[in-house]
Length: 124
Image (cartoon, rainbow, N blue to C red; front, side, top):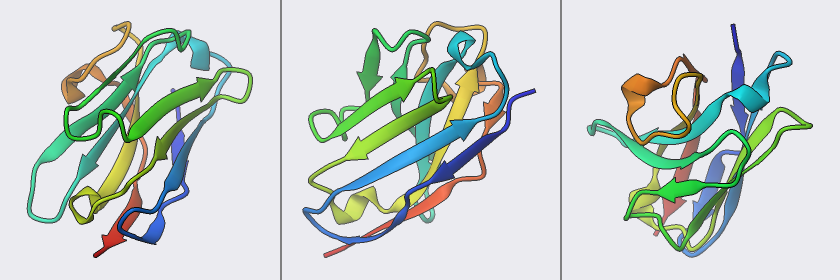
């Protein structure tokens, strides 16, 4: 069992930055691929970024590539999402997820554990 707790959300003006963190419980964090997803008001959950177990590979949604950076610190059991040049359309609840059966993934159904989410609001 893995518990995930996101933090770092908040209100920011367009063009600003935020850094989300997701802390995982347990001692097997390095065995999990990690991902970030988001759900905007009135929309379906969508993929944002994923990172491999070692951190050597990452992949992004087209909408955030070049602005967001996913990283992880396996010694701290934490995955991060650095978000720069934020836009109002980035407003959403952001979730981190952990998957044990994939090296990385942009598919929500391949993740086993999910956090409760953290709200990000970008004002224009």
